Amino acid sequence: MGGIYSPATNASLCKLLRVLRTRGDAPSPSRRPRAPESHPTASSAPDIPLPGIMSDEEHHFESKADAGASKTYPQQAGTIRKNGYIVIKGRPCKVVEVSTSKTGKHGHAKCHFVGIDIFNAKKFEDIVPSSHNCDVPHVTRTDYQLIDISEDGFVSLLTENGNTKDDLRLPTDESLLAQIKDGFAEGKDLVVSVMCSMGEEQICALKDIGPK
Image (cartoon, rainbow, N blue to C red; front, side, top):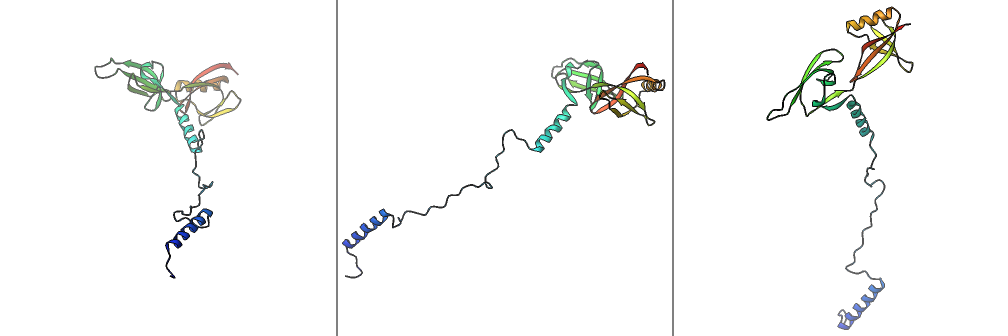
């Protein structure tokens, strides 16, 4: 009977289909085509920072921080003594008086500082708990030989390496100013001491080393 499959015919077809699947000529109904694998390229790979390497901006920031911190250093208020140095209201001062109050029931002992600005001689005062840190300025003194005095009040100084330093004015202290001018007019060899602190410089003393 045409168009009708008998059980024997169906069995033969199933057997033939199994043979074809075994040989790989016929696809399995449950088998699906695999998607192509994607491999990361150099352009799509994420940037991984290498340890120990800083950008230029980070390095520049640290350099600026170090430069700013080098002008002062911290010191506990209770350890600062008379004739020492302290920063009061942003100015480098020499401590001329210090007193410490007794510890109260609900607080710490406090230090009362009286300081004189090392550049303009102004008086400053501050009260700080003795256990807190204060900013203390780095103060240095350098001696230079006086070479010349200009009409506009600038001095020319000889450095240790033989160069000249021409960016300082005569001091404002009248007594020191008179000693420098008189000694220079008399032709004496003069050595001046220059105090430097927190980015400022000023002639603070005079040494007479005799005639030229």
